[in-house]
Length: 182
Image (cartoon, rainbow, N blue to C red; front, top):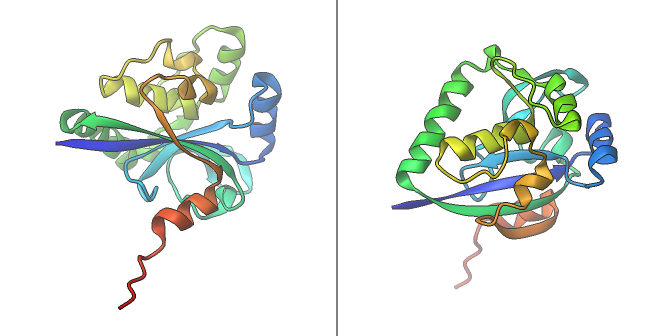
């Protein structure tokens, strides 16, 4: 039995996203992982409150609302084994139930710039979290997750690009009810 996971890279247009983009020279500066094609089970580290960029932590993201409503995206998929899926979901569920204990690793972003890992207990930035989860799932990550950007994730050879464009357009295509005529 296999499962498909999705790596979702987005351009949200926030000040932090723009700052990261100035450093990386890349458009897509937020990374999430989803466990279903419709992105209902999508997780990352980001803002807990829409209007407060300092309120970061672990969250289940709503791909239709908030910063994602007008976001551009690139979506990749990857097939994993049932055991890899269980390993990843075990971590995600634990983190979700303990989400108030997790923080956004703002300082870790400076570590990326300096190419030096900044270790903080229960703190991640978005691409660090996704890379760590892939690694926990037994997938090869070619550098330290604490130094990975969303662009680094996009370079992983086992990811297959399935969509590029407006996130809302992707969701309309995969979430729209099937119309039956007869």
